[in-house]
Structures are given as C-alpha cells and as structure tokens.
Length: 219
Image (cartoon, rainbow, N blue to C red; front, side, top):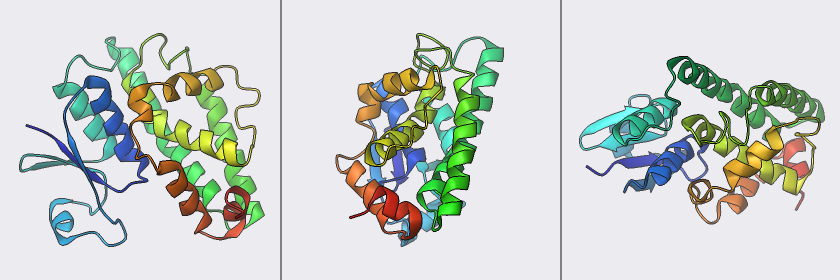
C-alpha cells in the first residue's frame, strides 16, 4: 500500500520522512497544503491539526519522529544501529534535534538584534554539544542512519543561512562541518525538497520583517 505524506513545502519534519523513503527506494505520494488555510479534509484526518501526517490506507500516523520510525520498520533493512543501547542513544539525540530547530526558528524570526544574538548563542551552544557526539563521517560512523536523516533538514537550512549571511556557526567544531557535507551530498537528501525550496525559504524569512529578515534577505 503506497504511503501518502501530507505537509507544506517548507516543513523540515516531513522532509525527514521523504529522506527515509528515498533512501529505501519506496514509492510514495506527497501532497502539500496551505498550512495557514488547511482544507477541511485535512482537519478531519489530522488528530492535532498539525503536519506532517502519514496516511496509509484509511489509517493515519502523526508526529514526525513516529512517522520516521514506522517507515523504517516496515521497509527493511532498518536505518537504526543494530545494538540496542546505541539505538536508544540515537533516539535521544534525535529528540535533541527539536531544541535545535527551536533555536533556528528563533534565529530566523528575530525582530530585534538582541533576540537574534540570543538565538544565535543558543544555537552555537547546542551545535557544540552535538559535535561532541559525532563519530564521522556520519553520526555513528560509516553508515547513514535514521539520525542522519533526522538532522538533514536542519543542516540544509544552516548551509543556506551561511551562504546568504556567513555566521561561522561551525567555527571551532571538529566534526560537524564534515558531517554536514556528507549528509547534504546524499541524493536522497538533495531530492527531499522541491526545486524552489531555497528561494521559498529565503522569502519566508524575508516576509517576517525585523532584524533577521534584513540580515538574511536584505533585498
């Protein structure tokens, strides 16, 4: 049964599931909705009214981490490490990604310079924590795992921000630059967003006004 992902074009969390499906060569459908004006049919099937949602026949799965785990389980071989303790540690650091996404959101939506500086400082601190956990070239070593897919949307957005207005977020970090390069080089990651993603993301930041909008999209 072909799974269907439902989300919006800039959602980093549906991107995680797309990467998993692409890595495993699974046929799937994806439908993008207007998150600010979701259709009634979406409201009817989404328990929390949030994206992403995975529809499998008449059943619905929600929450991005759960969707990733389900897709990994039903489409073997698993992208998780085989050793139970390492798998548990990976899941814990996948949860840590949520706080990084929050700091990133604070960075790109900051209205004032002080808010921006606070968000950047928080982001730098969390990236340093993450760097200390990396084995290289991927999170656990030579194999691309589910945790790499979980962080790929963050790494992609950070790469774009560094291109538009360099911050040196990876300065002083020993493994994160190479990890980012390895993850972003994978075809499944490159093909996990729509062709116009970069422009839409920059426009999204620019439309928010304030300090971050001026910094990353001065035009």
